Length: 294
Image (tube, rainbow, N blue to C red; front, side, top):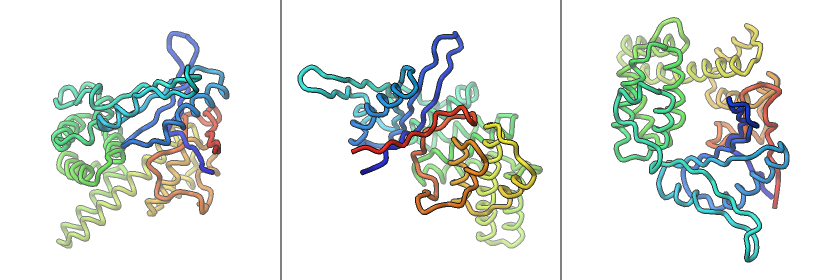
């Protein structure tokens, strides 16, 4: 027995008024042969449950994984009973954004391209371009949010270290925000005491405070009514794995009680690389099917 979990499932409403469809997004950092049977199952399940067309989009960070994911998945004897043809995005068909002006033109798309090319030998150059473009963005709140998402999405510690160094070099912390105040407090402590421990503590406080700010922003965007008590609970939490767990729950929770429920032995802390399917509106989401099979 095992539990199948989909990465992300979205109901897409088309602006031209045509019928909506289900978009199943799977992020692959390597070959997983079990997906060759899981993906056809996901599509059949979603098609039957929601009575909508289903599109499978696989995101890959290297060409070998992309080539594997693009293969037709056939089942049946002789003439196939079912054929699954995933749509695949990888380094071969997603542009490598290596000019600041191109990244500045669409920061969100540039961040997506960066993730696809996160295994590129010149990842430092790509990250530098993205950092320079972000530094020019006048919307500091959105910039800080995107910078945090980029760090979370980088697969290697080497790339994350490059990105953190860029952020400390290019970004001036802004007072009056959780992230800015925490980072400045850490820097001031480090300068005053002249010890690396102080600077590292400040950086860690900044990361924790940044996650808290992202969680509050996510819950607000999802439509939850946040009391001052709830805000205090989030902003005073210094446990990064617990904040990660709350953030993952907030993606598809329908009540605040679900988000802040006491962690159980089955909860994965810190947050796993692959999260259950989710949507952005409480009460209208695609209920997270975690069907058991085999």
